[in-house]
Each structure stands twice: as C-alpha cells, then as structure tokens.
Length: 91
Image (cartoon, rainbow, N blue to C red; front, side, top):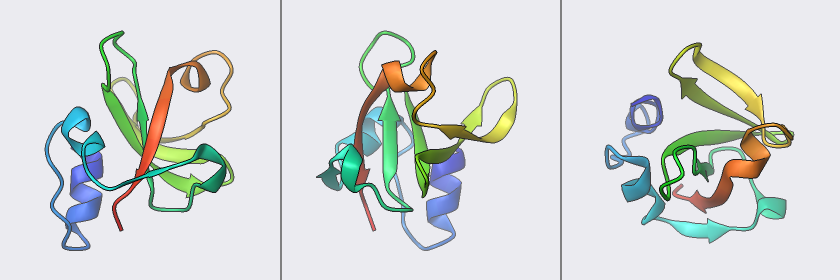
C-alpha cells in the first residue's frame, strides 16, 4: 500500500501486489539504482513478496508490518541483502 500511495501522488498507478509491480518497468542492475526505483524482495520464500522505493546511498523506504514506514539499508547482511531479488525503473 505504501509504494502504491507514494506513486499515486505523482499520478502513477501501480498494481496492488508487489509481484504485479515487478512485471512493470525496466530492470535495473543494483549498481545502477537511482532514487525512485522500486526494489523487490522475497520475504516469504515464495517469489516477490515485498517492495520498497530506493532513496539513494544503498537505502530504501518501505512499510514494515511491525514498525510502519521505515528506511532500511540494502546491505543489511542479516535480512534484506539475502532476500533482494531485483529492481525496476518505473519513472
């Protein structure tokens, strides 16, 4: 919901699910990420299950079930870096 809400503020309609979002846009290498790119993760063990918005400096903003909207490092060795699947450029 968070990612869909943010993009809607700029007149961009995104699908509701992260897996449907992953089908859109142009694939982006991790080394070429720019602010506004969507970053995707497999958090449930079943394909794409989470999405965030890259904000630069290897960080992304996303909605956490337990902590609300937070900023997290893509380099987190304990969780996110292991679950990173890819990125897409929608803008």
